[in-house]
Image (cartoon, rainbow, N blue to C red; front, side, top):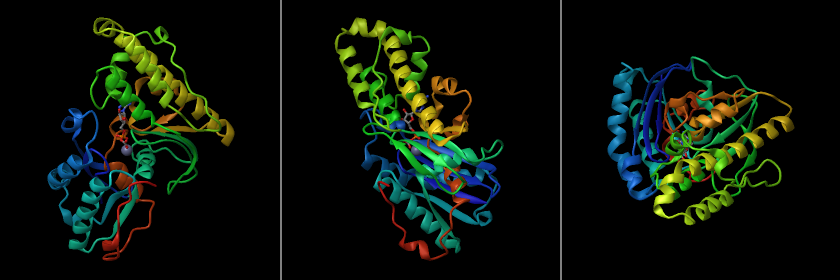
Length: 320
Ligand code: KG4
Ligand code: ZN
C-alpha cells in the first residue's frame, strides 16, 4: 500500500493506492472557499490551512481505506513544483510519517503526478501517447514514452489555460476558481456571439494573455445590466477560444510526433467542451483531473524511492 500526500496549492489531499494502481481511498479537502474572497490562492493562508488539515485528511484516508498505518509500505509526497510554503508542509509531514516507521519515501513531481492519473485502475492508459497537461499553473504538451516520465514539447509563453479560465471568470464576476463556473455558464450561451482571438505562436507553444485582454475590453463596453444579459455568451465564446487553442496544438503535436494516441490531464481536463472536442483522446477520470493524492501515489510506482533516513535532507522546489 502506498500513502500519497499532496499539498502543492490549495488542496490538502491524502490517498491510499496499491502497487497495482487500485485506488483504495482518495480524500481531498479543498481550501477554495477560504481563498475565494481574495480572488486567488493566498500562499501564506494556504500553508497554514495545510498544517491544520493534513493530519485529519491522512487519518481519513487511512480510515476510509480500512488500512491502519502499519499496512503502508511507502510514503509518496509532492516535492514540487508549487507554492513553496504549502509544499513544505506536505514534505515535512511525509518525512515524519516515513521516518517514524522506517519506511522509504518517494518525492514526486506534481506534473508527473497529473500524467500518472492516467495509469490508475480500472482503465489505465498505456504509453506511448502525446499528453496535454492543462492546470492552473501549467499548460504543457508532453511526449510520454513510458510511465516513469515525460519530455516537454510545448508550453505556454504567458498564462496557463486554467489561469485564463480563472481570470476570465473573475472578469465575468463568477468568483474563484472559475473554470468550472465558466464551463457551466457556457452551456447556456452562444459561442459565436463574440469572436475572441486565438493567439498563434511559433512551434508547439501556447499564449493566452491576449485572449484575456480581449475579454476585458468586451466586458468594459457593457454596463451592469448588459453584462448580466451577455454573460453566458461571453463565457461560451471565451471558453470556445481556449478549447480551440488547446485542441489545435494538441493535434499538431500528435502530427509532428507521428502518433494518433492522445491523452489529457489536469484541472482543465474536467472541461466538458474540451472533453467533447477531443473525443478520440483518453481523459483522466473527472475526480482525478483536479489536484489529488491518488495521482501522486500512482506516480511513485515508477520512481526510485529514497531509503530511510536518506530523505531527511529532501527539499521542496517551487519551479521546475
Ligand atoms: O490541476 P489543478 O487542480 O491545479 C493545478 O495544478 O493548478 O487545476 C486547477 C485549474 C483551475 O484553474 C480551475 O479553474 C481549472 O483547473 N478547472 C477547469 C474546470 N475545472 C477546473 N477549467 C475549465 N473547466 C472546468 N470544468
Ligand atoms: Zn495540479
